[in-house]
Image (cartoon, rainbow, N blue to C red):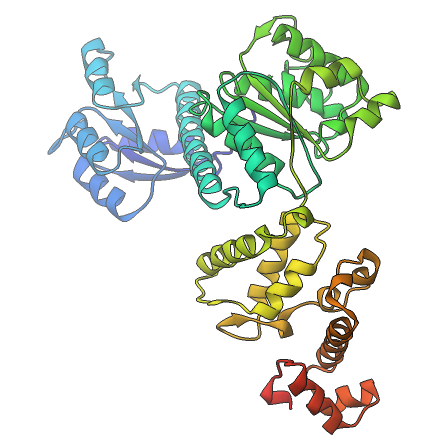
Length: 464
């Protein structure tokens, strides 16, 4: 586990003894921001006005003793850790303080090393608790805002598979092009399983340097290699009881594939540089956008590992094979960015939606999401996304002729579509200036105006 950064932590010292306050301030001031008050009442006032990461609280004080001050601090903000300080080493007092919510109990005279160690542990605990709260909120947010949206028959078959495999512990191999939502499917399987209250750990094998991936998966012992300054818990150990998602499994090196295979067979491993065998219970889901069968034939992927992973195969169809989902997804992403950016865009015009439905989407759903975000941010109208907002590569696509996807519309309609897109491209290049666009098109301005009207091309009156 990486060390927690506690720089600039704010510590409040509460003690009626000036010598004790000065002593603590001298011990702590090199590493932390230290603030001192003389009693519990002043402490409560400061806590209500400012933010502190830790309180060092004397047990015996006039006006209000340490236990009552502790109770009031915890009633106001239970997340603030309090270390009690006392001139007497009393088990009864220590027990009472801990029952009231104190993090620890130290006695005078102060041992500087002991105080610094206790404070470091308390601040590390606070930092980790914040991280856990953040990660939980992120997970909840991802489930809320990244639902699988589809009405296509091919995806309904995927949904049925998700329902079936969720109740099992079998390994799953998800295949599909980049951007089709393979991680969402893996998360859906985990969420519907009995493991849903345990961790879901996603690891992109291609994003981690090959020489570090083994340590990332299995962990390492201190000193096991250059830079291993502390023991590290691997992702498999962290995911005990839950699900591990290995994305882009095809990028894993052959030698590490052998170790992964052994783990899948034995469900145990040793950390890098370690000797102790660690057993874990995890559900394995892998994903790839490359045909592993071809890699097996080229001796680039172990056949036995492929069969071990591919117990239940799930193929995610590309977006071009589920065009009926494009309007659903576009509307969903529009709503998402409306909420994020606090906007009230009403929708996407039918003409734009037609362009989106005709596009072949090589980047799949991820490309569609990125485009909708771009259109929302760079929109020319406050209420609608229209053709003026579309980039050239969608309005005027060489790929249309290559794909043959519009051959069924007939020559007259095809010519109209081409002419409309050609004029739109010229208008966008000239920033909507119709006179300049007519010059680029080598036609009279009146002819351009007639074409604009007959082809129902949206125009910006400011540039007419």
